Image (cartoon, rainbow, N blue to C red):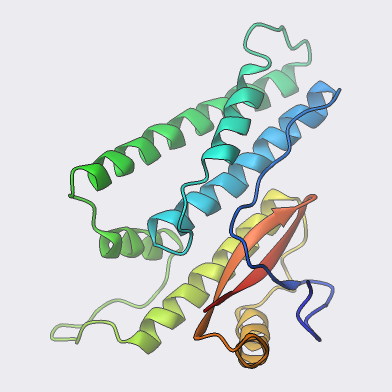
Amino acid sequence: MPVPGAACSLICLYISKSSDYSLFVGGAMGVTEDIAQFEQGLNELIIKYEQYFIGIEKREPLKLLNDLESLGRRYLNIQIVNTMLKFKYNSTLARFNSYKQHWGRINRLIEDGKYSRDRFKLELHQKYKHPAQPEPGEQPPSAEREADLEIEMLYHKFVEARKACHLPVSNVTHDLIVNAIAKQKPLIIEKFKCASVEFKVVIEEGVPKIKARPKI
């Protein structure tokens, strides 16, 4: 259900007690719609795996992964006449398979006890071009700095999600995200009597949203 006072033209904060989001794949859709859904679903899956590997998501998004595998196989043995659509399908499929291998390697590291969540956060931090660099002798990140990093990643993920959905991003600023979270977080904690709140980016019906989940 919507968080009171959070609705606006750019950011929608929703409260969710479940982290199980899934992409529905099915129906008699055309090639263009299928490929667009494949591309959009992959962008959402990338976000979900990032959240899973840094510990925000507690469960691996296997249903969405399986849905996309099924959608990706749909045109393997079917000729796509339109050259542009064929290129888009092949490039999205190649990107999907590349990410699958990457996620598989990380999962194997987890199984072997060699996975470092802090290292993944650092790599994700560098991926989104956070300008801050550790100074010699600097102390380990504080809880406040960790929170700042999560908001920074949330902002970049929200922007990337809007780009993936072909939505404007010029009026999406870092301060807009920070202020929205700062305003709503204490209201959610007070309403649900929870210890803290998790925020994440989801894509629903082609529209990126920031969802809030109370942590009891």
